[in-house]
Image 1 (cartoon, rainbow, N blue to C red):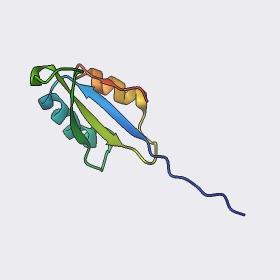
Image 2 (image 1 turned 135 degrees about the vertical axis):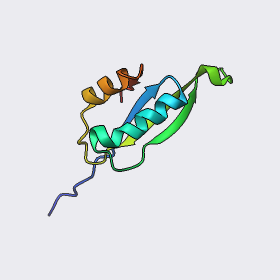
Image 3 (image 1 turned 120 degrees about the vertical axis):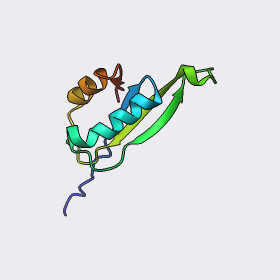
Image 4 (image 1 turned 90 degrees about the vertical axis):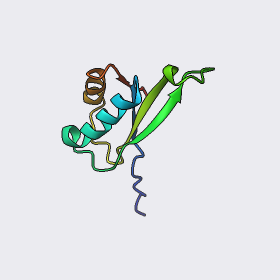
Length: 87
């Protein structure tokens, strides 16, 4: 009986300080890492804060093949004063 092979649902979340920076990172992911699927930009308001000044922005990168190197993504985000969120 053959085993079912499950494609991994790997998702990387880069945390950036503002929307413009997040957009720059999303735009560069294709050139730098060969990401073909459009990353999602998500506003992440800090707990209890409604002011846009207190919002971080997330760049969500789908990586179903699990080919992206987490350490390289973290270093890339650090260039923009951000980081890779731990799974």
